[in-house]
Image 1: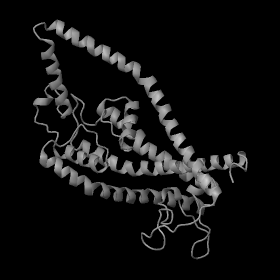
Image 2: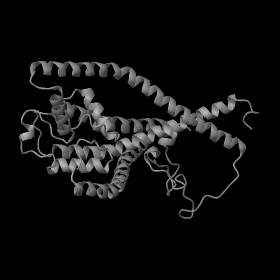
Image 3: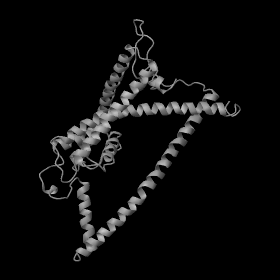
Image 4: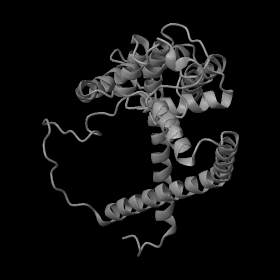
Length: 330
């Protein structure tokens, strides 16, 4: 059974005895048995004797997973180093030249005074105050309701950009308890939204099945609908919107959208913080709502990719069992 068979499999019959279409199993939660539950709630696992071949297969799978995981990280590290190291050196040289030129233009300033001035500016930016133009003197607050709602969404979703954070003792303590109960609530919310998205795929599959379409084609079209619709709604269109609103390039918009929805949240790109730009009311609130629904879609996408990787791993292990001599694998 391939990944499409596992992901989008029609049931044989409904209670009336007629064929029916059960939607995408890749968008459904695993049954309780797969989650480690037995007939009795929270019962301890019953010790059993594991066959030597199964034990060897498990060790082989674990070894392949560990090796593949670290190889993936090593390759990623090498690529990032090759792409970013040269640009970093150029930025450091440009910063040093800028500091030297600044001191030459203002000879009455000492190096220590300039360093302190730059330190103060850096701290202001880290605290959410951007000292460009007259922004720092305006009455606009980082903690108006729109920004506060955006911050609350980043807390419960565990994105945590770091550009906006509570600084008072009361705000920090409240943030702890808000996250303590808000993160589980967010998980329940995303689970419910995921069920809604799964239901759409089920309805599409059932509609196509009733039209007489072949099952394999239904599986492909249903999966394609899920991927294309999600990429369009949660990545492509928002990136175009950010390009217009924030002045970013389209690739920067794609980068921000994925880094945000995957909850990586570097904080290098944050909406509503570009100096000199005027944003409409509740702009960040709208972005927060996009984030919450986008999280549900990308969680289902990661679940699908996990299924693909697990199936690929099983195929590799099965092929290795056929290649390796029987005496090495009893």
